[in-house]
Length: 110
Length: 130
Image (tube, rainbow over all chains, first blue to last red; front, side):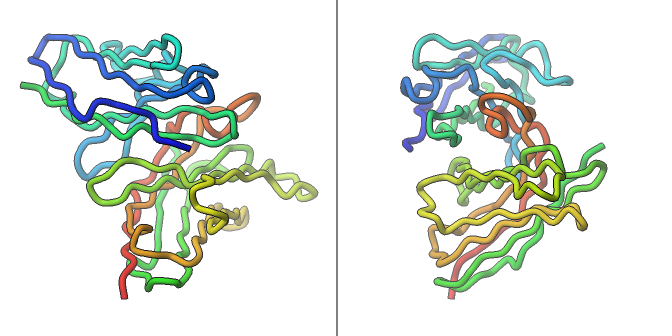
């Protein structure tokens, strides 16, 4: 299984909105509504931010939202804050009953 | 509150077997899907595999593994100790990584075990070197 494709880096200024894309195939992202997004700060374990494309776990800020169109899922962070600077990973269920992650995106808050 | 703690040897020699343990406190590990996920230094996340055990002694549980590991991985559960274990055979330097244990949000239906990991341990670093 091939990793999902994410941009290596994105950046934005405080208060702005940014979007991170996650592109797969019809056998993963495009075929199922089981896409998740994780935030990982340096030296820390990942934290679940979005699951099932657009669901936020309890405690996650409303500034984080997810969507999907065809084989591409997206994570949008609105009202960017300094604490949002981190690595972000998407993942998707696959037709082989396995899980594939994206390569990760480094978000820089300018 | 559920807490997860991974533990392991830290250093493993090439061609040997890596053995890790994930100890869960705060709730039983039964009736939930538990995955191992790894992250090589400076690189991205890779799902290793999962195990589910209902607690029914007549049912061995279910597992799924990343096909890229070519059958080298085996995950098991010890309900008496509330632990999930990972064994990875014939390790090479490519297996050097932080290994995380994580719980999935979904228990039933499609994508059970592979929906989203809402509880993670802090990870245990494993280096493969002679």
